[in-house]
Image (cartoon, rainbow, N blue to C red; front, side, top):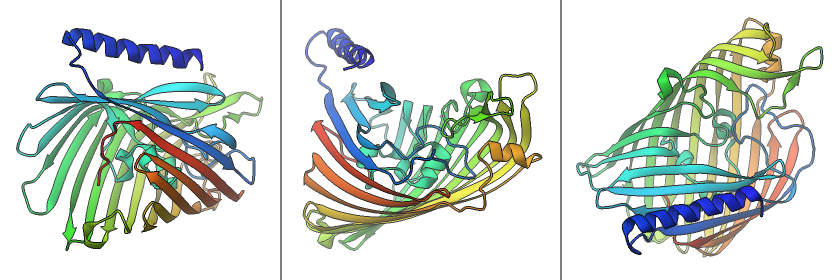
Length: 405
């Protein structure tokens, strides 16, 4: 176990101990759960991953080959009192041979404010879209759709406040807004004194008889980006062999629509059930791209870009514990600027390629706490087409809350 991991465990233990002492007795009794994620991956080619037309960042990538750990999580949550609920999720993963511990979520949320209003403050997954709010272990496939990889570096996560309202109507109607710091990918710079990004979303849904349910959502995110670097692509070299880092500053707007439909005979999902979901996003950006080489006069270009794409997937449980799923992803981009060569160096030239991917998965869940999954993907994200096979296990130890619709 690495020193960093031991230090993190000690910090968690100290937090628990301090909280218990503050309570004066053993009344501090949070729900604790540990998600373990292990994988084996196989690729057909070893070329550097890229999505032509997109500046990658965050955790965007196709993962690792061979045996490796995925995205394990340590989760603590409890009601603070009759007004507040608190939750912390620490993600433990290995990158480039080093174990890293990241504070993925840490927020408080109100309980029983009344009138359908809920407020949240801290670090949390944005309410944008459908899949974004789910932790990776709850996904139906081992990886994020290409559009999430291209726009959000897999998921949109930030620090700020979230406010939502559920209307007192027979049909499910929910609207919400978020104001966040805007420092994490795909924003950067925390403009406007650390209030650099905002999100608005609305969802409606309901039941169709006793066997079907549906939900439809729209969302919009915007940010003033100051110095967003592209970490997903390999760094480029200039003519003298120095390293250049593509850096974007300007406006960024993302608009999306999502839907999900579920079927279970007579509402009993334990025997058979079917879920169909899809999302579509379009992003518009207007600003400048600089190839930062730490010189006084780096190459630069204006940048007026449009990137879009989505996915459609179906997952069918044909008998208790066994499921199969099929997903199709696609992307497209149209980026313009004053210097096409600089745009290309920044990864914003789509090279006449429209990325797409076909994914087939099958999984077995021995109980609600364990799952084994085999997935095959025909990945045509870039010119070097790839066949990716992933074998994954996910287990949950301890108490763990239910997931969203």
